[in-house]
Amino acid sequence: MQYYILDSLGEYDDEKYCHVEGLVEGVDDDQLALECGGSLSDIYPADPFEVTMELDEDSPKHIEKGDFVSTTDDYVMVSTKVVEELKKNNIKNVEFWPFTLMNHKGRIHSKDYNFVVTQPYDALHLELSEINRDENNTVIGVDKIVLDNRKLENAPDVFHINDICRMAFSEPLAKILQEKYTNFVFDKAEQA
Image (cartoon, rainbow, N blue to C red; front, top):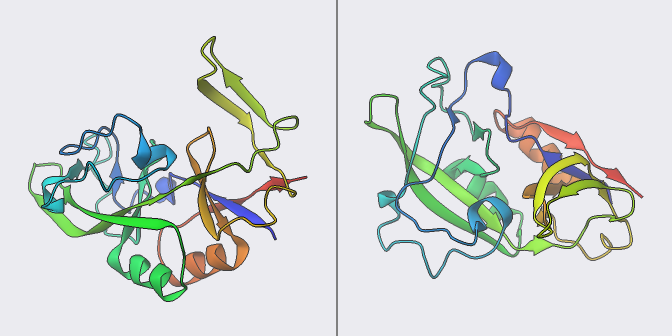
């Protein structure tokens, strides 16, 4: 099956849809599960709306509430409508965590968004991908992503790609999200 990688900037060049940049406030995510995959069930607060993200002050025109919130980080933030779509399509191994989106003035912009978190999935073709790592084997840059077709045989419809903190979607799911919802941009994954 063909997979598509979510572009975290969405339709950023249109200077329209909400854009965030910076840290999530209200949850201590030492394991980077929000960006790279994992579970938040042990660390998310009882009142999920204590968790906040602020619109990027350097992008003051990006205030329209699209279905995907763009970011320079690898958080995946979607509207409640998208959450319902994913649930309707029986997407497995996915957690949805509501949060409060704050505007440029520190006021509530919306409580209609959720972080989408999946488990990391070993999908990289290690020989063909170009991943830059430091001396501790930590990823410090990604020049080329190639997914391994052998590893994708039993892959879920959506997953965080192991090591590189990017989210991949099956072709049918990416098509639904791009056709029915706003601000979703996908790049066709190179696969071998």
